[in-house]
Length: 151
Image (cartoon, rainbow, N blue to C red; front, side, top):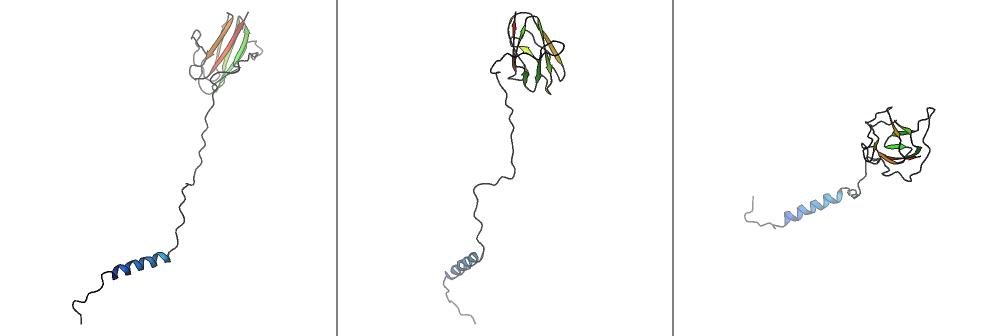
């Protein structure tokens, strides 16, 4: 038989709930501490090409002279080699392209432009007047060379 109007304490269910919650929390394993520094899974390496913007120091070296007697400047992966050449007036200089990308040889005042050169192509220029001639590749910033023509 049921007893009417029996009041139960209102806090009893709340106390029972929190007691069970504490018991359940105490029985579980403690979680691993969180790490604030992430562990990288991949390592990336960035390779940045370094270009000389101006050839320094400007040292005049004898240009390579093959059996035919024509001094040559090799043109390749963003360089002219040698950077500076000293010749007598009336000398023909030949630029030989040995790189993968197209290049050209143009005076800085555009008085003697060349056509774009691909691998294996050659460009020749005769220097009749004494003076200093600076040339560049207009396709690649930073590529420059110098020719000094003497009497």
